[in-house]
Structures are given as structure tokens and as C-alpha cells.
Image (cartoon, rainbow, N blue to C red; front, top):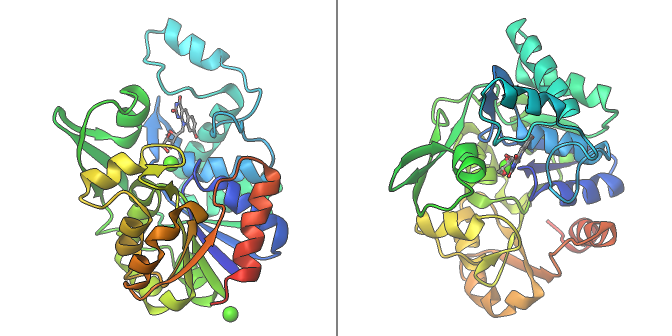
Length: 306
Ligand code: FO1
Ligand code: CA
Ligand code: CA
């Protein structure tokens, strides 16, 4: 049994590769990106994994449902609402039903389980906590919710820091703790280390459980050289005072993780990472197609012995 800690867009390809090769996969999902929109509770990372595993994900965008329509959003525009967050019609149904279930007293874990059944997803998707965590980006103009910074303002302002509101008080999902404890291997997906994996590591119970079994934890770098394969990871790492390369990542994860997979192009960082008492594995980490997703998943499952 393997357990993956995952964000959304940067993580879904690897999660899909792993699920195609391993029968029992737990996905512990970030909730720091979650966002209230028009009274609807949107959970981008959970939904990206669910849609990705259900083969419904719009792969080009990396979020939302493929071939979705946007009539609901256009009507909200007519009503004078802001429409920078592009919720599709089918996607909106997901948020609406989830919000209703929350209002009827169900917790996010149970709702996510129900959602997996409805979308015929076999992996066990576990929100890292049922409490609220909000990732906030601090800029020179003030603090913004991650979605406002990245989607509304297109990530253009310089970043001064990152905060996880609620993380220190959040109770880890007991099922997530067990999934980490019982796994033969725990994988930190190549999601954004600060906004996808970071919020989960900020929850004390999760961090503690990982540190106990760190010999079994394998991180996949989302960076090649000084740059992220996609998204703003490098910018956020620099803002947090972390070197934006595989070494900086390894150092950031060194309390919770003893193994890291880096791209073959980062060979020159291997010795330096090993000095952190970490095992380093080299392979091609970009996943441009299904073949590459499966190849990386296969490498992790067959070549990395923990
Ligand atoms: N990302 C965008 O860049 N623009 C959008 O309009 C957008 C809409 C959206 C709707 C539903 C959903 O689940 C995710 C969506 N995302 C969108 C992606 C999401 O905001 C990601 O969490 C962030 O891009 C940060 O990883
Ligand atoms: Ca995300
Ligand atoms: Ca076991």
C-alpha cells in the first residue's frame, strides 16, 4: 500500500501513473487552496485529483472538467459578479453538492469519499484535515488568498512570504495519519512545495507522523535547475528564503523525508543533497504524456527501495 501527499495540477500526473500500477493508493490531499466562491466551497486540489483519475480533467489547463461549458459563469457576469475564477457548469455542480452536504453537517472527508464513488475513482482520496486551512500570499500590497494572488492577479506581484492560516490549530485527519503510518512507501508528489505540500507539512500531527517514518518517504522534485517544471514554485521558494532548486527542496523536506528523486539534468546537485543524509535517485521527471507518467511511477515503485 502506498500513500501520496498531493496538491492538484502539479501532482495529478504522477498520481495517475501510480494508480495505474498499484492497486492500493491513498492520496492525502491539500486543502489550503480551498476557496469560497458565490457561497460555493471549491476544493481545487481534491477535484483535480478526482477528475484526473476519472479521466475528466482538462489536461491542457490542468484544472476543471474537459469540454465543460461556462453558461453559469456568464450569467454571474450579467448579474455583475466577478468572474475571474473560471468555474465550469459541470464543475459548479460538484461545488454546489459539496457545499450542501457540508451545510447538512457532513465533513469534507465523507463528502470526498462519496464523490470518489460517484466518479468511480478507486483511489482513496483523503483531505489532510477536515478543518480549514487557507494559504495566503504576502505581497508588498498586502495579503491575498492564494487564488486571488495566482488567478485574479495572475501571480504578478513580488512575493514577500507565505502563510497557512489555521494550520497550527488544524486537527490532522486520523485517516491521513493512518495512511502515512501503514504505507510501505509515502510519496511527496511533485506539487508546489510551498502551496501544495507545505500546508500539509505545517499540520503538526502530519509532520510528526512523516518524521517517524522518514526512511520510507520519497519526494519527487518539481524543479529542474533553478526553475519549476510548471507554476510559481521557484518564486514562492525564493520568497520563503529557500534555494529554488532540488537542493533547497531536499533541505526543506529533510526532517520528513530521506529519499528524493531529481532530474538527470540535476546530477551536479546529488553530492550536496547526499550531505543532508538523503538518498538521491536520478531519472527524467517531466511528464509530458501518459507514457512518461507511467515511466516515472514505475521508476518509483520498482527502482526506489525504502
Ligand atoms: N486556475 C486558474 O489559473 N484560473 C482559473 O480560472 C481556475 C479555475 C478553477 C476552477 C476550479 C478548480 O478546481 C480549479 C481552478 N483553477 C484555476 C486552478 C486552481 O485555482 C489552482 O489551485 C491554482 O491554480 C493553484 O494551484
Ligand atoms: Ca493547487
Ligand atoms: Ca505495511
